[in-house]
Image (cartoon, rainbow, N blue to C red):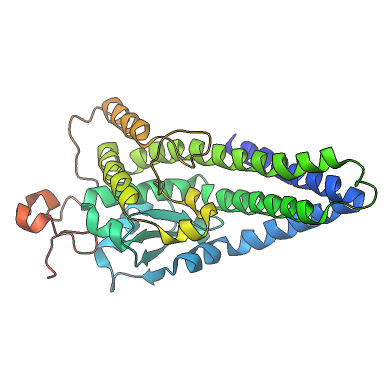
Length: 314
């Protein structure tokens, strides 16, 4: 069912793109729009992960450079029955994370240094479980492709605003103006609707993968406040990137133009899942054989991170 919805939504955006091309350029404009959309989809399919990671200047890490973080991802990927994704760290104080890639076999997950220094090990595991749920649901490719087509619709609409249609359409200025202003707005609504729906699905998937929905709820609360206080230069330069993150850079409140559901609603849903699972208190997410973060004295716990969960590094 999720795959069918995806096909229908992408078909709707492509049809919208073709309709705008026809309004601005007649039959030839519709054909050109179709060819352009097909080319964009093909390019994005093969290069979505590279585009997003390069945009964030992410660096790949392994068990030698970030042992705890990579180990968290590896253990969660095994729980989710997914191939081990590539793991990246972004040197940024803005606390956030995302996943990308065209399918589970070519996936990557990334987190900022701001997130890793802010959250406990269980909370980082909850966040990574959320990103792996996106990978398992094949959301990563769809969101990138949808954002690409929506951006192209806006570009084509702006092109029509400045240059107008061909001689066959110049008499129908009302249709052209509707295409210019309504088409990009409709594309944006579809894009945001996809994003909000899939965040709830990924939260539930994370709860099932990690077995600890309360840890993800705690992480979302911290990230919501952190992302609100610390600006995200990437999303400021490229607003289309906002839908990739686990939490938005702004207020995170439900509205027509929000890229994510209300953070408090997500937290409430996760606590309801914990009750559904019969969890009275948050259990350790993974790796019970290792010392828990909670066993570390509070003076050291404040400095703990997923890269050094026991606070051993000065």
